Amino acid sequence: MKREIVFATNNPHKLQELRQIAGDSWSILSLNDIGCHEDIPETADTLEGNAELKARFVKEKYGYDCFADDTGLMVDALGGAPGVYSARYAGPGHDSLANMALLLENMRGKADRAARFRTVIALIQGDGLHLFEGVVEGEITLEPAGCAGFGYDPVFKPAESTVTFAEMDADAKNAISHRGRATAKLIDYLKNN
Ligand code: ITT
Image 1 (cartoon, protein in one colour):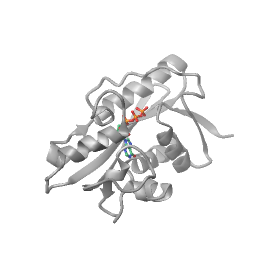
Image 2: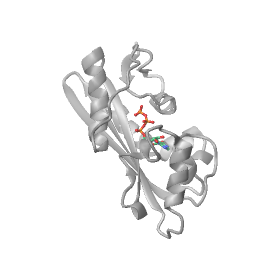
Image 3: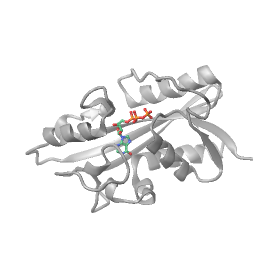
Image 4: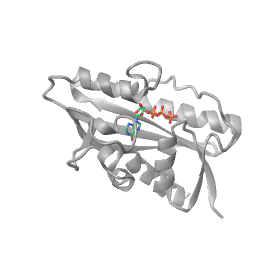
């Protein structure tokens, strides 16, 4: 029988990526699947803190073993911004187009375009907390390209690619992405525990 675990996210793109990476051995339940329609607070000032807050919320209120991810885009020329505030860079609306537009505006004229995505996954299993990290290095492009993926994908070109994440198919992105790398560690851990 497939083992069940909750992925505490409201982002349908993340859920789809995770299910694709995890394959058939796990049944990954969404917040919707367990009847959780609340806004889970993300009030910490680190990716680790927010990932843990989201996973603990579900474990404590719904009783399921659960994991959550928090992801940030860190841009060197902007002193690491938008970082932990990536979802709300252009305001509270979580508007990806507005976030990208603001990022490109703030990067106008900057020669150093180095950036990285970092994902932290927090797993709460029983009483235990486990953290898994994934990072991908790359750069911010001069303009958006591609329409696959989500979020900042059209303006992020990983170092090991000639195109942006939004110009890759899902398998190609997952093979090298921050979330792909963190998830591989999570799946490996779950297989052995
Ligand atoms: P949760 O419900 O899981 O919190 P979220 O969309 O709020 O979903 P995050 O806080 O982790 O997720 O995301 C921070 C921001 O980074 C947000 O604007 C996302 O669109 C963006 N982001 C996350 N993963 C990304 C990826 O793989 N590619 C491009 N942008 C990404």
